[in-house]
Length: 159
Image (cartoon, rainbow, N blue to C red; front, side, top):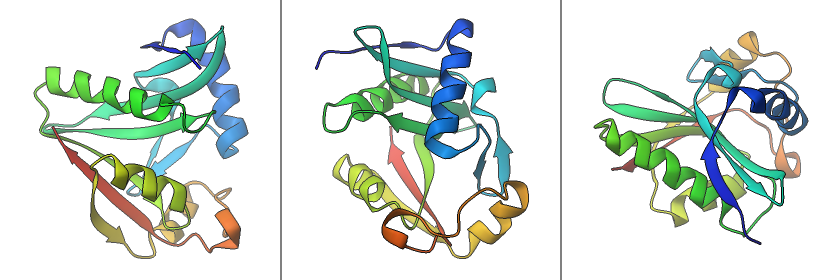
């Protein structure tokens, strides 16, 4: 499958909103106890034959860039990797030292994905989802394969 990566544009927001709601049940995202709306963040989309096949949103901090959302709607085609590379390029251009992101303990496919691409697991935030659910009550208690969703796992990629 061929696809192209481009920056999110204003007219993409309704499509992105629908994709995020379908994937996550909401456009709100909680990371390290903070609530974010990815529709307000910069990012990139991946398109194939006019269809949305992936998206990533991010936010800059003083010395790092957080990947707030990463969604690939087709697996093992390089979409997620290409989207992360696009964010890494922007972060390098901004002089950032590293990228970082949060995933949950049930998301074994994501944990494998990041580690295979050189991301380092730097922290386990034990019990963090109890706090996150105060901001976003719709976070399920159980995730992939019925695994309880209790903890945040923090990954980092040096640039």
